[in-house]
Amino acid sequence: MIKQLLSTFLFTATTLIATAQCTPDVTCIPSGTAYGVCPDSATGLKHGVVNVPYTETVSLKIPATTDAFGVPGGTVTSIELDTMIGLEPNLTYQCSAPSCIYPGNSTGCVLISGTPTQVWDKPVVVKVIANITTIFGPSKVPRDITGYRCVVTAATGIESLNASKFDVGQNTPNPFTGRSEIHFSVVNTENVDFKVYNMLGAVVYTANYKADKGTNTITIEANSFAPGVYVYSLGNATQTITKRMIVSR
Image (cartoon, rainbow, N blue to C red):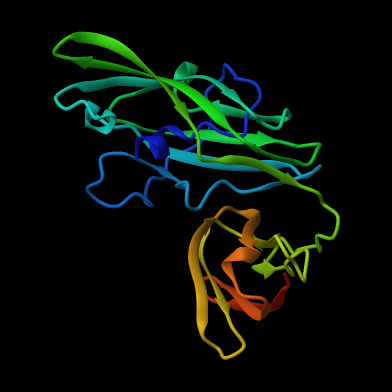
């Protein structure tokens, strides 16, 4: 869980001095949970598209105690970002906390932005330092955080979406043997339900995403499905749009 907490500092190449103009939203973290991140590692960060402006807010809830580190009885003074490796060079971040130092028992956010200029798909290693206090006094605990990827895809083949309404594009590539992406747009930040059906009408995959205003991306892997024809649907509170996709391998 602490890996999920600390893996918020992604998709960046340069640390900025100014604090981010973002508002933490930790509603995806279960009630009663002392720490966590929205989006979590299962949902992942949105993928970028070459030469398309990218923004996303990542919200985090910092623990109050060192139980998250497997050290009971201590307190977390703060968690700070040290450095990171493996990021697309044109993406930057701003932290809501000065100098990217988040106090213990607090919430915060990271505003990720930039315009990527190259296709990119690399693991990100985030080096952080937890400042903790135990019965032995204050100490610094370094951590290498892994589990997220920095992914930027080419714009070729992406159909135009209508940004003034809820709109869903055809997955590309289609048919696909490895990875395919579905781009969709929403007018305001909202939750959307994603489902995949086989040709008998049975649901074979389902997920819920918190979509940000503008263009969003869902990535699907061919190895999650048997070869064949499927129908996928994406719906918000008022509308559902369906498309057909083909898994071929």
